Length: 292
Length: 139
Image (tube, rainbow over all chains, first blue to last red; front, side):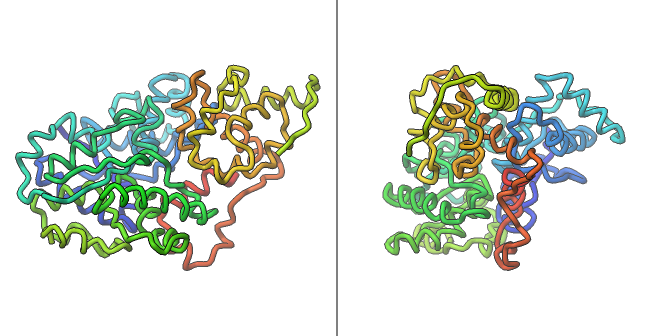
């Protein structure tokens, strides 16, 4: 299966640890992942107004690029990109008039879009196309003893029509980390919002949210938190210092992309983890389990 | 908080109700005020009007109270409310509609001035934060 890989803007700078580990882990698994040529920002959020059409252009342009590349499906690891692209795709599949208006606006494109490409999240590809059993068989360095709190946030699981798993009790990430040999840790706020872009407008909200999520994961015995969204990662990792100002007793808890855990377990080199992009020390928790 | 409410049908409030319904794609009167949305809202602590109250105020066409509230900007469309509403009302869409009404009015009342942020703060923020903030909080 030829997958067009869409990294998204933040993976090319702040979240290079997500990008590099995705490519390294997928290559190890034998997935043919080719980064889309000439991709553009997806817009990051799906406009919710009923008359919003203009914000569908950015995601649809990316789907046209993937179609031109001869891809069987469009794949991304970023939860926000996934949701924006998935929902734009659902919109034009359900509303042929909107699709026709968009194609008219994109008349300089060589290719019309017909809603004919599936938008997939990497976790779906791993679960549904590869399978966690097969993945487990390829693990070279089991993450034994590592206790992982899987944090989904919002857009992997909501809204329901664009969710990759159950909205209230998802398990795909827990199943993945279990296949990697780690121990998934349940915690009650795994689908509770991190505050998202309020980090720009009102960072005090993020301090409170991050405190709630990180302290809950820690109370349930986690060594680290796994995420799939660069905005969640920024808030939970880079803004942990602000949460610690609210509560000096909040112990540091590192935040990893699920792809970093995959790369580690599949035997990729430490360089692809790009640990320099973390703010909360990522090494101690891995070293304590003999994984670094 | 107490808001004096007079039930009457005047043109301005009716037009606002119609606008919110059109932009959100929701039938506001489907909501029977169970409060499930507010109970699960992760932003409730940062709102002076809770999500179910936002819907109630929208039903009543109280444009000034809603458009002037802080709560509509605290909501980040996490969509927990939508998934839990027993009547299938998409509260996040209702709140987005009110934000859109403010941002589309000729006052263009933007809630975020990125150029006013210090350069080091902007540099520390990932593009995903800046772009989504601009998309949701500015016209």
